[in-house]
Image (cartoon, rainbow, N blue to C red; front, side, top):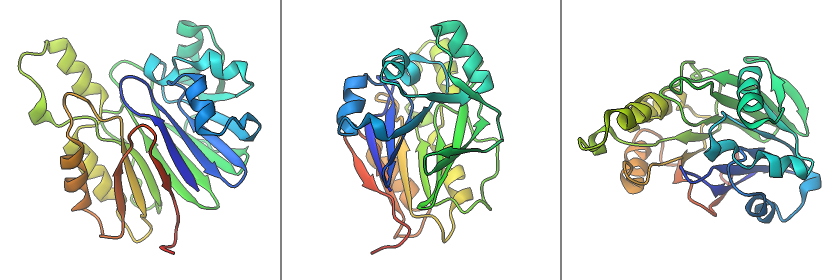
Length: 245
């Protein structure tokens, strides 16, 4: 299985999971032309796109994706937000219930706190492993320690010691209640660390309140040396594999 980072951050988010002949898109916050290039224009292989919440850096190009016949899946709660704000109707799924038959993928949406906005993380399964995808969350409210997570796409947005005291209170409030801080991310990584863990991509880093090298180094110290900790930067492509060879 391969994961491609189309873009990651406040300017737009989009990822492609490719397993065999199937492509599952994560978020539609990048222009369709960038998404199409990342998947070699093979829209016939796209089994769907899952979206976390209604903010434009995650679903701002939903209309373009739908014009290419791509079905967008969200939780029922997020579906209501998108229909109200953007006028588009996604395929709503019940939280904590598995959706099978997205090609070789099955997915489970689960609520994560993101200020006052409905938002979901996703548990994604294929024959090639289990992926935990969490972005724009103050923290993860569920315990995945016994779920044998193989791969993570996990937000590590900011470190609290980088927040400027000159920022307005409302700006800091949005960051604090809507994004995963370094220490919170580290606790989550520690909770899913096991012999099954193979790779974690750190996503949605803040340009002003983050430090990619520091974040990667500190989180690498928490896991075995053979677990690949990497930064999801635009254009990054990683192979997810259960065996080292």
